[in-house]
Length: 265
Image (cartoon, rainbow, N blue to C red; front, side, top):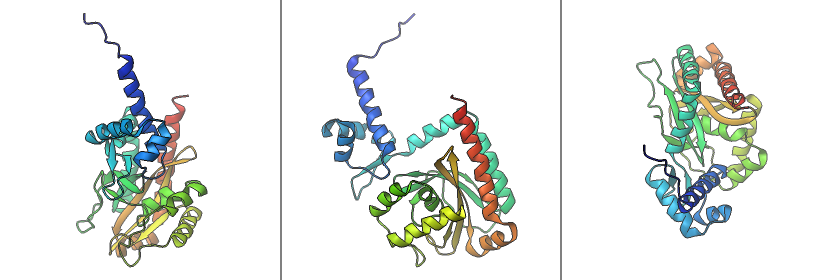
């Protein structure tokens, strides 16, 4: 029988350093530079760079080509979803998203925040033969011009919101895109007061979306959205009180998240 190999102190230290870097990235509320990661982990820059290079190779870390800053990659998201599947949460979430799609007929997404972007991690396709080209699983979009992005920011602490917005690069995607920080902060305040966010042709002409937040206890962890052609979506809003239905779906998913956490106490 082959004896179990015990990691050397050197390899254990390498693992510890890798975990330090991942934790520093997860705590960062934005993309973060090599220098900042070095400071936040008390590791020298050459060590952090080697770790980041290895994580980039396997998809655990990504780098913004323009700013050269780093953020968590899609592999980390897939790990978190593997955990959800292990706890049987994934099936429950899909069931709720499917019920919402069946209720309104339009495409439903579940998204999370990664740095200054949203990442779509689940999608239930709409039933209409004529729809919109909606976001694929794993696709990234900006925070400021998406309904899910607004939601994922609106329920953060005010200090954190201002920190992110002050460093955010607003890019106009359509004539409806909000590109002024003060107006955007006011928009987030309105979102929090209403309990949901809207994207009224702000990322793509002819496309609208409505989204609401998902919480794990009091912390926002995701957002659910319904996306469709702007004219059809707002007909549904009037006829079916769509915003309230999305909020109800999010309440159910939030309960699953909370129960998952309770299982570990």
